[in-house]
Length: 268
Image (tube, rainbow, N blue to C red):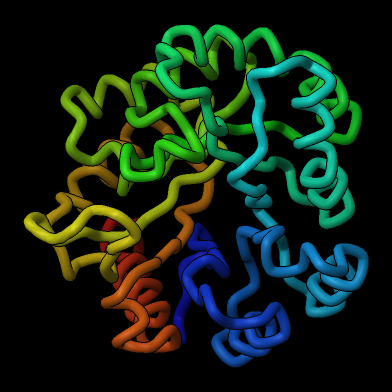
Protein backbone atom coordinates (compact mmCIF):
# COMPACT_ATOMS: atom_id res chain seq x y z
CA UNK A 1 0.00 0.00 0.00
CA UNK A 2 1.29 3.45 -0.93
CA UNK A 3 1.40 5.82 2.04
CA UNK A 4 2.14 9.52 1.63
CA UNK A 5 4.91 10.68 4.01
CA UNK A 6 2.63 13.34 5.55
CA UNK A 7 0.22 10.70 6.92
CA UNK A 8 0.36 9.19 10.41
CA UNK A 9 -1.67 6.39 11.96
CA UNK A 10 -3.35 6.83 15.33
CA UNK A 11 -3.93 3.57 17.25
CA UNK A 12 -7.14 5.04 18.66
CA UNK A 13 -8.46 3.91 15.27
CA UNK A 14 -7.96 0.29 16.35
CA UNK A 15 -9.59 0.81 19.72
CA UNK A 16 -9.89 -2.82 20.81
CA UNK A 17 -6.49 -3.97 19.58
CA UNK A 18 -3.42 -4.38 21.74
CA UNK A 19 -0.17 -2.57 21.10
CA UNK A 20 1.25 -5.80 19.68
CA UNK A 21 -1.60 -5.97 17.17
CA UNK A 22 -1.06 -2.33 16.24
CA UNK A 23 2.63 -2.92 15.62
CA UNK A 24 1.95 -6.02 13.54
CA UNK A 25 -0.59 -4.06 11.48
CA UNK A 26 1.88 -1.24 10.87
CA UNK A 27 4.49 -3.73 9.70
CA UNK A 28 2.00 -5.41 7.36
CA UNK A 29 1.03 -2.09 5.76
CA UNK A 30 4.38 -0.37 5.70
CA UNK A 31 3.25 2.31 8.15
CA UNK A 32 6.29 4.10 9.56
CA UNK A 33 4.74 7.01 11.49
CA UNK A 34 2.26 6.75 14.35
CA UNK A 35 0.69 9.07 16.86
CA UNK A 36 1.62 7.04 19.91
CA UNK A 37 -1.33 6.35 22.21
CA UNK A 38 -0.40 6.14 25.89
CA UNK A 39 -3.59 4.21 26.63
CA UNK A 40 -2.27 1.27 24.62
CA UNK A 41 0.79 0.74 26.84
CA UNK A 42 -0.08 2.43 30.14
CA UNK A 43 0.05 -0.88 32.04
CA UNK A 44 3.75 -1.32 31.22
CA UNK A 45 5.10 1.95 29.90
CA UNK A 46 8.74 0.92 29.60
CA UNK A 47 7.89 -2.25 27.69
CA UNK A 48 5.52 -0.38 25.39
CA UNK A 49 8.13 2.24 24.57
CA UNK A 50 10.71 -0.47 23.93
CA UNK A 51 8.35 -2.33 21.58
CA UNK A 52 7.53 0.81 19.58
CA UNK A 53 11.19 1.70 19.22
CA UNK A 54 12.18 -1.86 18.34
CA UNK A 55 9.58 -1.85 15.57
CA UNK A 56 11.26 1.19 14.04
CA UNK A 57 8.13 3.31 14.32
CA UNK A 58 8.44 7.08 14.43
CA UNK A 59 6.12 8.82 16.89
CA UNK A 60 5.03 12.19 15.52
CA UNK A 61 3.24 12.94 18.81
CA UNK A 62 1.84 11.17 21.86
CA UNK A 63 -1.78 11.10 22.96
CA UNK A 64 -2.29 11.53 26.69
CA UNK A 65 -5.26 10.62 28.84
CA UNK A 66 -8.61 12.27 29.30
CA UNK A 67 -9.46 12.32 32.99
CA UNK A 68 -6.78 14.48 34.62
CA UNK A 69 -7.56 17.96 35.89
CA UNK A 70 -5.34 20.75 34.60
CA UNK A 71 -7.04 23.65 36.36
CA UNK A 72 -6.34 23.02 40.07
CA UNK A 73 -2.69 24.03 40.51
CA UNK A 74 0.63 23.97 38.71
CA UNK A 75 1.78 20.97 40.74
CA UNK A 76 -1.36 18.93 40.01
CA UNK A 77 -1.10 19.78 36.32
CA UNK A 78 2.55 18.78 36.17
CA UNK A 79 1.80 15.51 37.96
CA UNK A 80 -0.92 14.73 35.43
CA UNK A 81 1.22 15.53 32.38
CA UNK A 82 4.59 14.21 33.53
CA UNK A 83 4.02 10.55 32.48
CA UNK A 84 3.07 11.62 28.96
CA UNK A 85 5.98 14.04 28.66
CA UNK A 86 8.43 11.39 29.85
CA UNK A 87 7.03 8.80 27.43
CA UNK A 88 7.18 11.25 24.52
CA UNK A 89 10.77 12.11 25.37
CA UNK A 90 11.70 8.42 25.45
CA UNK A 91 10.01 7.83 22.09
CA UNK A 92 11.55 10.89 20.48
CA UNK A 93 8.10 12.41 19.94
CA UNK A 94 8.24 16.21 19.65
CA UNK A 95 4.87 16.80 21.32
CA UNK A 96 2.10 15.42 23.46
CA UNK A 97 -1.56 16.31 23.30
CA UNK A 98 -4.37 16.12 25.80
CA UNK A 99 -7.91 17.39 26.01
CA UNK A 100 -8.32 20.29 28.40
CA UNK A 101 -9.71 18.21 31.27
CA UNK A 102 -12.88 18.15 33.36
CA UNK A 103 -14.37 21.16 35.10
CA UNK A 104 -16.53 21.41 38.23
CA UNK A 105 -20.27 21.62 37.72
CA UNK A 106 -21.46 25.14 36.77
CA UNK A 107 -17.94 26.46 36.26
CA UNK A 108 -17.97 29.08 33.47
CA UNK A 109 -15.76 28.20 30.53
CA UNK A 110 -14.01 31.57 30.83
CA UNK A 111 -12.91 30.63 34.34
CA UNK A 112 -11.70 27.23 33.19
CA UNK A 113 -9.67 28.80 30.38
CA UNK A 114 -8.03 31.26 32.76
CA UNK A 115 -7.26 28.51 35.25
CA UNK A 116 -5.66 26.32 32.59
CA UNK A 117 -3.34 29.12 31.51
CA UNK A 118 -2.46 29.82 35.15
CA UNK A 119 -1.72 26.17 35.98
CA UNK A 120 0.34 25.04 32.98
CA UNK A 121 3.59 26.91 33.69
CA UNK A 122 5.59 24.23 35.51
CA UNK A 123 4.52 21.58 33.03
CA UNK A 124 5.64 23.76 30.13
CA UNK A 125 9.06 24.19 31.69
CA UNK A 126 9.37 20.46 32.40
CA UNK A 127 8.33 19.59 28.85
CA UNK A 128 10.65 22.14 27.23
CA UNK A 129 13.61 20.74 29.17
CA UNK A 130 12.86 17.39 27.53
CA UNK A 131 12.32 18.71 24.03
CA UNK A 132 8.56 18.14 24.13
CA UNK A 133 5.78 20.59 23.34
CA UNK A 134 2.44 20.36 25.14
CA UNK A 135 -0.65 20.71 22.97
CA UNK A 136 -4.37 20.79 23.68
CA UNK A 137 -7.04 19.16 21.53
CA UNK A 138 -10.39 20.74 20.71
CA UNK A 139 -12.87 18.10 21.87
CA UNK A 140 -16.56 17.51 21.21
CA UNK A 141 -19.26 19.05 23.40
CA UNK A 142 -20.52 15.46 23.78
CA UNK A 143 -17.39 14.75 25.83
CA UNK A 144 -17.59 17.83 28.03
CA UNK A 145 -16.66 15.61 30.97
CA UNK A 146 -13.10 15.42 29.60
CA UNK A 147 -12.56 18.89 28.14
CA UNK A 148 -14.01 22.38 27.81
CA UNK A 149 -12.58 23.60 24.47
CA UNK A 150 -15.03 22.78 21.70
CA UNK A 151 -13.94 25.12 18.91
CA UNK A 152 -10.68 25.95 17.22
CA UNK A 153 -11.20 29.60 18.13
CA UNK A 154 -11.43 28.86 21.85
CA UNK A 155 -8.55 26.40 21.71
CA UNK A 156 -6.41 29.02 19.98
CA UNK A 157 -7.22 31.64 22.62
CA UNK A 158 -6.21 29.29 25.41
CA UNK A 159 -3.15 28.00 23.56
CA UNK A 160 -1.87 31.55 23.09
CA UNK A 161 -2.48 32.42 26.73
CA UNK A 162 -0.95 29.17 28.00
CA UNK A 163 1.95 29.00 25.50
CA UNK A 164 1.00 25.54 24.26
CA UNK A 165 0.25 24.05 20.86
CA UNK A 166 -2.95 22.65 19.37
CA UNK A 167 -3.75 19.15 18.22
CA UNK A 168 -6.30 20.15 15.59
CA UNK A 169 -9.22 17.71 15.56
CA UNK A 170 -11.16 18.38 12.35
CA UNK A 171 -14.09 16.32 13.63
CA UNK A 172 -14.66 18.98 16.27
CA UNK A 173 -14.24 22.18 14.26
CA UNK A 174 -15.28 21.51 10.66
CA UNK A 175 -18.60 23.32 11.16
CA UNK A 176 -16.93 26.42 12.58
CA UNK A 177 -17.17 29.67 10.57
CA UNK A 178 -14.03 31.44 9.42
CA UNK A 179 -11.79 28.38 9.32
CA UNK A 180 -9.43 29.63 6.58
CA UNK A 181 -8.63 32.74 8.63
CA UNK A 182 -8.27 30.70 11.82
CA UNK A 183 -5.85 28.38 10.05
CA UNK A 184 -3.77 31.28 8.75
CA UNK A 185 -3.69 33.01 12.13
CA UNK A 186 -2.81 29.95 14.20
CA UNK A 187 -1.02 27.46 11.95
CA UNK A 188 2.13 27.94 14.01
CA UNK A 189 0.35 26.25 16.92
CA UNK A 190 -0.70 23.06 15.12
CA UNK A 191 1.32 20.04 16.25
CA UNK A 192 -0.82 17.58 14.28
CA UNK A 193 -4.11 17.50 12.37
CA UNK A 194 -6.52 14.64 12.98
CA UNK A 195 -8.64 13.53 10.04
CA UNK A 196 -11.91 11.59 9.89
CA UNK A 197 -15.40 12.11 8.47
CA UNK A 198 -18.93 12.38 9.84
CA UNK A 199 -22.42 11.84 8.43
CA UNK A 200 -24.71 14.76 9.29
CA UNK A 201 -27.89 13.58 10.97
CA UNK A 202 -26.26 10.75 12.88
CA UNK A 203 -25.39 10.82 16.61
CA UNK A 204 -22.28 12.93 17.14
CA UNK A 205 -20.51 11.10 19.97
CA UNK A 206 -17.75 8.68 18.91
CA UNK A 207 -19.29 8.21 15.48
CA UNK A 208 -16.65 8.83 12.85
CA UNK A 209 -16.36 7.67 9.26
CA UNK A 210 -13.58 7.00 6.80
CA UNK A 211 -12.60 10.22 4.98
CA UNK A 212 -14.82 10.63 1.95
CA UNK A 213 -17.69 8.61 3.41
CA UNK A 214 -19.39 11.50 5.20
CA UNK A 215 -20.53 15.11 5.02
CA UNK A 216 -17.43 17.07 6.05
CA UNK A 217 -15.85 19.19 3.27
CA UNK A 218 -12.48 17.58 3.94
CA UNK A 219 -10.82 18.47 0.65
CA UNK A 220 -11.71 22.13 1.15
CA UNK A 221 -10.50 22.10 4.76
CA UNK A 222 -7.24 20.30 4.03
CA UNK A 223 -6.62 22.58 1.08
CA UNK A 224 -6.91 25.65 3.29
CA UNK A 225 -4.62 24.08 5.89
CA UNK A 226 -1.99 23.51 3.24
CA UNK A 227 -2.48 27.02 1.87
CA UNK A 228 -1.98 28.37 5.40
CA UNK A 229 1.43 26.70 5.49
CA UNK A 230 0.71 23.68 7.66
CA UNK A 231 3.69 21.36 7.20
CA UNK A 232 3.00 18.62 9.76
CA UNK A 233 1.30 15.25 9.77
CA UNK A 234 -2.29 14.43 8.94
CA UNK A 235 -3.28 11.84 11.52
CA UNK A 236 -5.85 9.15 10.71
CA UNK A 237 -7.97 8.86 13.86
CA UNK A 238 -11.15 6.82 13.47
CA UNK A 239 -13.69 5.72 16.05
CA UNK A 240 -17.25 4.45 16.21
CA UNK A 241 -19.83 1.89 15.10
CA UNK A 242 -19.17 2.23 11.36
CA UNK A 243 -15.46 1.59 11.89
CA UNK A 244 -16.14 -1.43 14.08
CA UNK A 245 -18.62 -2.81 11.53
CA UNK A 246 -16.25 -2.40 8.59
CA UNK A 247 -13.21 -3.68 10.43
CA UNK A 248 -10.10 -1.80 11.43
CA UNK A 249 -7.88 -3.00 8.57
CA UNK A 250 -10.27 -1.92 5.83
CA UNK A 251 -11.20 1.39 7.47
CA UNK A 252 -7.60 2.45 8.07
CA UNK A 253 -6.50 1.27 4.63
CA UNK A 254 -9.22 3.28 2.91
CA UNK A 255 -8.45 6.36 5.00
CA UNK A 256 -4.77 6.25 4.10
CA UNK A 257 -5.59 5.64 0.44
CA UNK A 258 -8.03 8.56 0.37
CA UNK A 259 -5.50 10.98 1.82
CA UNK A 260 -2.60 9.66 -0.24
CA UNK A 261 -4.55 9.97 -3.48
CA UNK A 262 -5.31 13.62 -2.81
CA UNK A 263 -1.85 14.57 -1.61
CA UNK A 264 -0.31 13.02 -4.72
CA UNK A 265 -2.86 14.76 -6.95
CA UNK A 266 -2.17 18.10 -5.28
CA UNK A 267 1.60 17.68 -5.41
CA UNK A 268 2.00 17.81 -1.63
